[in-house]
Image (cartoon, rainbow, N blue to C red; front, side, top):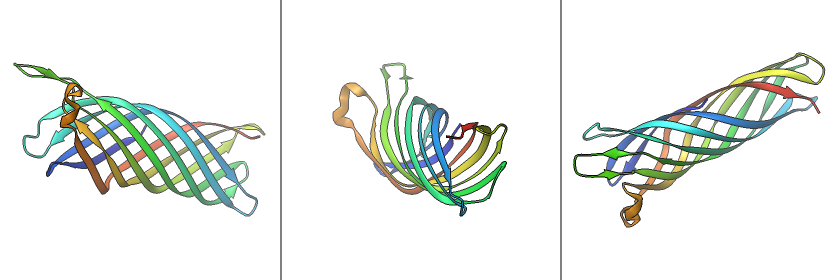
Length: 183
């Protein structure tokens, strides 16, 4: 369940975007006998958030899809029945969002398509319940190293699309829990 917060600059105006996402992910953790550990993950989710500009502080609700991939390398200082691991992470996050806004005179559908390159780290704790099955939980904390995309107010007028670009903005906190299988 990623919780994200970032600031976009569109036409010299800062916009605050904060969201919560519900994700289904597949992650492969591998721990070597010398303690080195690696991680590879894929995720897809549904996100819902608030989009506010700095001038009017008007809030727009936006919803959409979130696709991501992450890679990491780290250490697992404890790796027996109990597993504790720490990783450095990098990844890519693609989001497609849209909303509905109604005024007295007309209705429009603002939205955005953007890609983030994220960096950060995670802490994982797991426990072998049986020889080949266990439970695992952890938290990823990342920041958006670079993001680029497009924002539009009305899909019928895509010629009015604005560029989104940001550097080292926002914090993403992703708690996760699941089961693991040993192969």
